[in-house]
Image 1 (tube, rainbow over the protein chains, first blue to last red):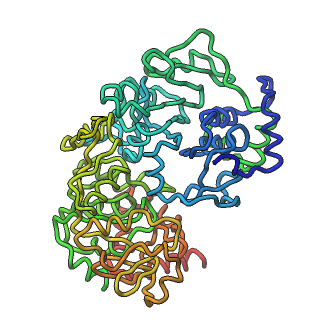
Image 2 (image 1 turned 90 degrees about the vertical axis):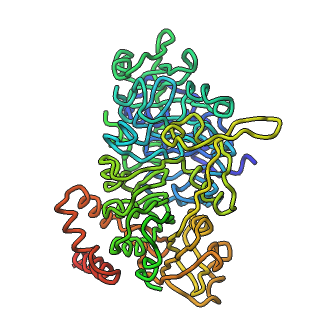
Image 3 (image 1 turned 180 degrees about the horizontal axis):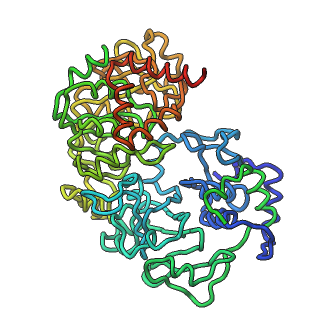
Length: 276
Length: 282
């Protein structure tokens, strides 16, 4: 049921202030724009588990819950759902509201009540994503993690991606191993693979993309302040769909900035992941 | 039992499941025992961490069944990477949930369990032996049929156990240790401390997840999960894990690491770790 997530008084005030967005904010860092762009991935999700992988997505999920998406469930990175908003790299002080050991995570995935944000080593035009290995699977040039939960995640519930370095070697014409399933592969695999496939957005250090292009192909949604569209096109190893003039990615409001800077990441870890 | 007693019951060519998750609550003292043995050609099944890395480095693995291998705070496992990049092991790479299903099917004595995970992905391409199955009901949908993965032996590390094999996790997550045990012909539990049965319930009834009918032997192994975490008894030894990774990247350093930590028995290992700590705090 909704409405149980505790929020501090200051957080409520932030929610009320979040309407007055402006592009004129001075001194907003690229990392802070990325945090908000990641947060936006969970907008409208309601009472589901947000599973961010990595620092910027984690900051984004906490910002989303602290502002416009208060019913999200967030873990301490281990096996507890924790209420409240807390700092990256610090233990969660908030009240524990649930127990979510790995076995329950799989149940949650298969029930679909989750939206994960993963970091792919490679991603293609239709959202196929590789986190397993670069090169031939039988003898990879570079072994990475393995498929992890990406095959199950993508065919069961909403998935977004975070790419800290937008480069042609990440945005490739064809990924070496399909771990996260993309739209074209799901369509070929049939209705069971496709029915819950829901790739929401790809946030990078340069831009925000989605799959609103022809046949669910990748589309450029916005570029971050200081980034030219040509720069994104040049950093992408396949053709992007672009609908007319590309807007700038929204920058955080003063209230959101205060949350990012004072509550979620007072140590400034975000700037290490996304340099200016 | 001792670590060596457990290892003496294992045979080359066996399929061996290892509990824990990544670099968390791994039965490392039992793995170290395997390193000292002449076991070879093993099929190892694991949500992999340094257990997999060490067994790769020692050439014990013929085939690895996994969804990932990671040290958690250090994402990539260097020995596993080397084994893959030199193609010295065969692999069966699954989705994490498929691996659970494979163990669960074996536990339930079913030939397979159906699931959605894997459809559309290259998990099906790199494992051409995998089959799909059509629902016999009105939906008629086609699903992945994850084959049962019966284990010859399972190795798990828990916080407490009694001498009969009733075992308890005291951290936040049992991981899949009970499933590894039930999927196995013989399961062996190492634990931080063997306690009288009467003390177990006080640790919390829902935490008593491994039962004596699942277990063929118990080893008392204080600090036995080192350098992986064993909450709440101890956290991961991050400094040691960093040293492990640094050593793994250079053959000479790895030879020194092996000589210092992995050639003696478990008590020698623990003494070397204690000496390192004493040196660091001196």
